[in-house]
Amino acid sequence: MPVATAAPPGTDEPKPLIEAANRLMDRLPGYRVEIIDGMLSVAPLRDGPHADALTTVMLPLLSAGLSNGDTEVEVLQGIGLWLPSGPEYYAVPDLSIVDADFDDHLIENNCYAPACFRLVLEVISENHRTDLRHKVTAYAQAKIPVYVVVDRKHSRVHVLTEPLPAGYDRHEVYAPGRQAPLPASIGAEVSLDVDEIVRAGSPKR
Image (cartoon, rainbow, N blue to C red; front, side, top):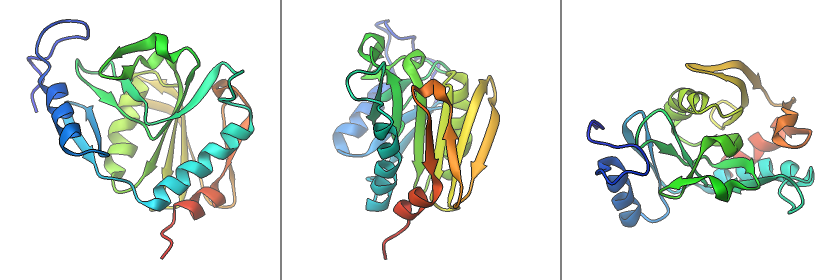
């Protein structure tokens, strides 16, 4: 979908993609609508194992003391991330670790500036191409320091760090039986148990 008529944040010019995205959200409650690389992406309601995997990821983060009200970061689900790669682009990661003052970084359309994000995480359902290709570039261009992908199909956890203009310089892949360490820059020393996450994200029948 073309974006030639789109304008930067803060102007009164028409924003056709955002307007279309908001109409879709009104018509499809609970669906996740994003604009990445000039394309509208609509993801259906997640299944139970997706939510279970997300909860399993959150537990060690919370146990490490993140998001307890006394730390400089918050662990949040479904918060909008404004992407600098396009005039209307934004994403809604499954989980984010953001600076505690993230409210001061609101841009528009309930999306926040990438500068307040320390980590974003996606749990793959059926959108492998988006999460492992398009979002890698989009998040790297936004200079998100850490991008984690839980790949339920291949039973892997990807940890990408050191963003560059075309992607991430480091891409570590962890299989079951291993711990996936996260950089201390997220606010604490945390490792993710790949076995637990993969098991939680597997179909229950």
